[in-house]
Length: 115
Ligand code: HEC
Image (cartoon, rainbow, N blue to C red; front, side):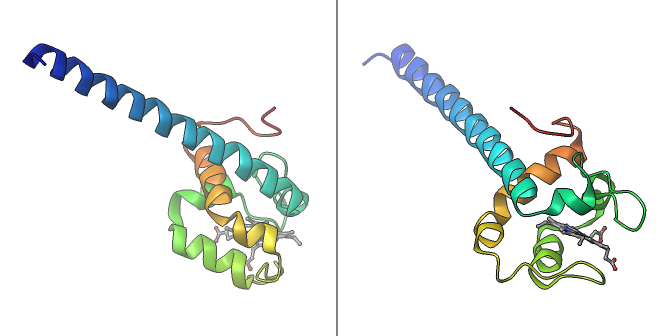
């Protein structure tokens, strides 16, 4: 193989990898949106995660919370928010849930259902 071909193959692989990881991120966000709804987070924190009344705005909250702090709050609860440690769907979906709320926080995705 000539050097040019090797370089082209290398660039192709990098592009393919970038496309695949962009797809994986999108999939995590869309799965996380479903966990957000089915886990009941939406009922208190609102369809766009903007909160209201006694329920904190997670779009702002996720700007300051680390992933570990987020997971600890969801796992163990906080104040009027119950613990989700017994909810397998939420616990298994923690990474996706975080990816979704982080994307809301970054303004990458709009509020409400994504489909
Ligand atoms: C029954 C209503 C209710 C439900 C359901 C609920 N929360 Fe909460 N959540 C709250 C309240 C109230 C607080 C504020 C607790 C406090 O600070 O005392 C809170 C706090 C939080 C915080 C901390 C925010 C911050 O800025 O410190 C996060 C993160 C959070 N909730 C995520 C979630 C997620 C994710 C779900 C779904 C798995 C969920 N909540 C379900 C009521 C709820």
